Length: 287
Image 1 (tube, rainbow, N blue to C red):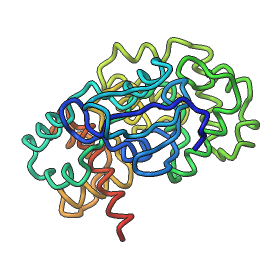
Image 2: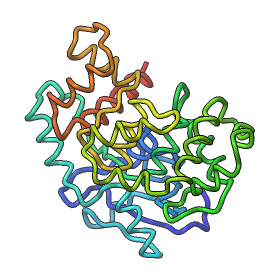
Image 3: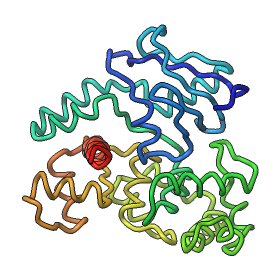
Image 4: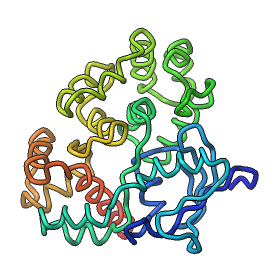
């Protein structure tokens, strides 16, 4: 961990007294610009700020401290520390007691919030690979241009690089999707901004007009980039977890699982997804 980075300290619990699990939140497939030193210390990016982040038991609940204050504020936003996760998890379990064990197992997990562009770029690179490789690809892309306000290279910069240059960074076939999407956004700079005014199903359809964006990527961008908690990304981990828990292990199409999730968990479908995904990865690591 780099000693010369700004240090941001986060209390062990939020304002509601609920634990803040930094590793599960920042190193669990929601965002890909964080590297773990220990359960209480990470290095990474909150918007444009490259920081060292530690959990500090001496801080009052819900507190974030660091210099410059803008970096601490960016970490607060990333970790969604203004939200009462104790109440939200309790509400989720009231809606569906069958999730009680999952929520308890992954207690302290939060839903990170990044810019729509960071989420889109990251999840375009996420198909058919693992978190460590996604991190390497995102880092390689981020080193190619001057960062914008969200800390990411701007679409026009990546469009100017072109597919072959992006492919040389180790992106494989994903380079074509990223190059084409960056070109589209460079031509239509308001594309992502327009999504804020759309309801989630319309937003997902809007995003799927971009090259390489299918339902899973669109739902991930909606959840982590736009804060749409009624989104429900379905990957292999979540698909297997929901099939096993609610469908007797029978295969179910992803579209049916998304409908099931929205009907069962409503505005907390994204929170249920985050807990199910984290619990599935915990079980896999324990084997």
